[in-house]
Amino acid sequence: MGVSPELFEAVMDLPGTTDVRSMRSRLLSLARWNTKLQKGTLPKPEELSWPEEPFRSKFIETLRKLGMARFTQKHPKLLGSLMKQFMQLAKEFEIEAMQDQSLSEEERKPNKSDRPPKSSGSDDMPPDTESEEGGGPTQGDEGMEGEDGEGEHDDVDVDMEEVDSASGGDEEEEQKDNSGDGDFAVGI
Image 1 (cartoon, helix red, strand yellow):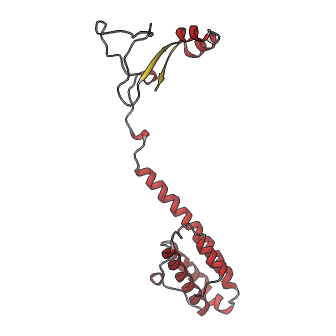
Image 2 (tube, helix red, strand yellow; image 1 turned 90 degrees about the vertical axis):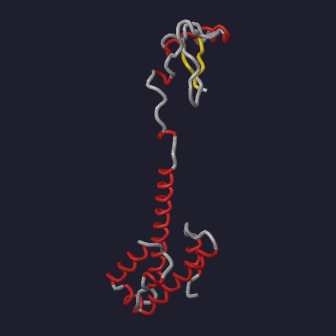
Image 3 (cartoon, rainbow, N blue to C red; image 1 turned 90 degrees about the horizontal axis):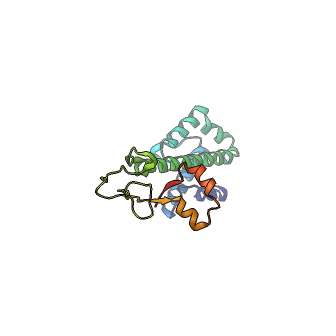
């Protein structure tokens, strides 16, 4: 096929070489590159199935501007170095293309930050919708008003004094410093 074992391995290491079909296509294109450059010509972009555009056309144009086809014909020993460099550039191009594709796929996926905010209340608590007569704090929520959150998460109200009495109260002072009045809500 006209491809050295070293270039064969380089093709196998490319991120886009995912199956036998892609490997075969790449090896055939690489053999065409080698053959054309040995003869002192450049392949036409449409003659190659790999590498992908725009890399393919840009690389051919760069080689044309540098007179590389004529140079590799006169100095065939340099063809191997050129092809190694070509493979390194192709690998970098494929990695970058895969990263760009992953980023664009991530942008198309809806995520939590795309959702509208829950409410404008403090601490993401739902607004108090209970009337004075309709209910009040539930058992164990002395001093706290509100109801279970509507939406994805329910908030649980905790009275730190009850927690302190159950745990021995060793951390009472620290918790009051951190929470202001000793009460806080935990999202579940």
